[in-house]
Image (spheres, rainbow, N blue to C red):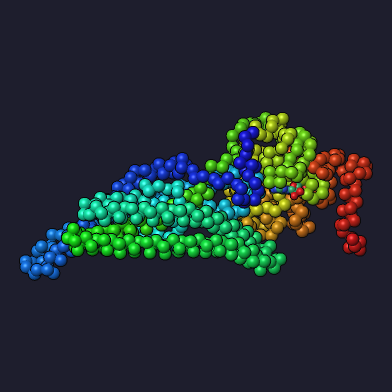
Length: 636
Ligand code: ADP
Ligand code: MG
């Protein structure tokens, strides 16, 4: 078996020593490929905008030249002389607006489609992960990758191409850490073209001034990049911290009943507050860094304007440059300055986008150890439903040092009911999880009709062979009908009714005003425990499973619902291979075989009478429960 990433990863979040995942360019290209044509068009439009922008300062300079001429000597008509130029400028402005509109539309189209594709792919891959993966992760953190990180990545992507304030505005902070060595000057096409174009046109005006510009700007950029790389790390930590805070909030809101029942609102508030405080101070630190950077760059760029004016002015005074040329220079150097500033903001955004993208792609490429499907199915007519655990050892991936099952051997004969009893925490549910193939055994194997479960198709196994009913049934927040149909998507209404009858649920369902169309609330919160359990039984029975696992199915219920549920379970158990897990021994008396577990091993096997006669563990358990159980006059 290949080394599994989920297993290899430490259970907690990655510490400082962990290898930083890298941005997956290959995957990114895959997402980009369907949009290449549109992207090409957007890039062309953006380049066009930049080219138009280059033209504008030159024309403005000429206009100023005309104005200057008229301030010196007032002959001729200013209007006729400037009309051509003004019309030209107006056309360029219009063109610029049109092009900007065009490429922004195209970009948002690409961005949104890519984001949706990425979310879909990430969600689908998350759903495919091993159960062990979810043992180690908080749902809130996973959800934050689906939402915040994809959003962040999309914004950066759009910004890289468009470089516009429009995109900046939908960021919650304008201007993120600038710098980062991973992105070259080639990004931010528009700015780059603008800068290059301006430099060319400026060098035609004055080489000396252009040289000054060309030396000063990259020097400033370099300094900014250095600062940026420090801020980049901070930004990543910041994102992780935000995800942690989301995780805490998600947990508390998702389990609000428990929080309420323990009056733990304040503690949850504090927990959330603490995580929030962490992310706030990180973000503030980041903000200070950014502020410092922007303050410094503002000073630097203003000094450049002053320098241009100063040197340019002396050139004008020495008659080496006309006033109009100087004007062109100033406007152009403003453009360069703005573009450079944008580029440095962009650098930061790219960095942030890359780290968000890394987080998104990380879970997109993670492959589970236990695939969802693949392997063969045993045809229904050959299926007997005999299950054997052969010397199974098992420890949970997130707690590798702790062995839950040791050399566990057990056979479930076809069509018989086997009860598994033992102390709480003894590993009974673990046995059921191995049978469902939520995990694979560390050693030994589990077989169905003599075939190793690892060679069988897991989806077929879970979807058609095994019905699993647990102590805490989880329903989805939709109608009763759909909840039952969850067990078999193509079931007809008649099949749903039949399953509900078999599960003793039909009566209470039809007593609701909306019957089968009643919406059960999130996680089935609007139903009683017994009702939920009977719906869960109906959901399991509708797939007509050959093997039934009942993990403490009645232990959370009051005695009246227990009777109803037990009745349904007894009916459902007939003719199936059944594994009943229970700690209340009275419920397993009728089993064909009772297996007593302790310390991860099978200790005793036999029928109720045989085990009582043996007078060992089982009879001890019976004796203890009899003491605990009904008579109120025997206090412990
Ligand atoms: P039982 O169902 O008999 O009460 P379980 O099979 O649920 O016991 O648990 C057996 C042992 O495995 C317990 O010590 C429990 O703490 C541990 N355990 C259960 N589930 C997990 C899990 N997902 N990850 C790590 N350890 C677990
Ligand atoms: Mg259990």
